[in-house]
Length: 188
Image 1: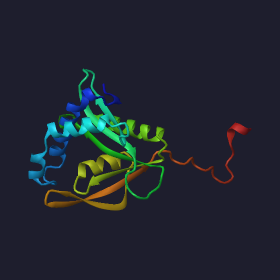
Image 2: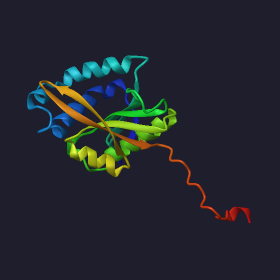
Image 3: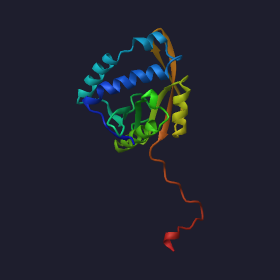
Image 4: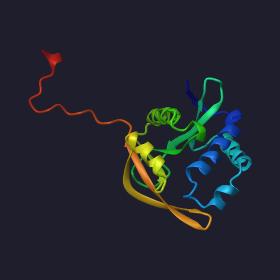
């Protein structure tokens, strides 16, 4: 059984290992191999510790923890960092699961908790960016109700520029309007 909680400094090494391992697994054949090989768990952990210690850090870091207490996944959610679509937009900055545990429901659990946190923070929509060629992640988010909204940005990965697609999902769907002539059975 997996539960999700806020990340602590004691989780940083495990989160960095999951993040770097996740990049190498998910982006093999998409991001240049030299870029992936140059990634370092130790350097990532240094950056992550510095971010975690900032009182004004931009997001909420969450970890998925297995029954044995092992960190199995990580997500980060906060306010949208781009221009429009509006002040109530949140952003899923990252979501990674240990590659050997992908497909076990940990990602869905992390995503649901991140969505709940974003809603609690007052966000009505959650946005995220996915590499265009990362078909597995795109399918994961599409299955969870996210749709590509047509926005594209390009990021540099060493000498290679790759397109990312923006996805969005409303967090608080508008209540359905009653059909014309419908009778409310509670008013009878």
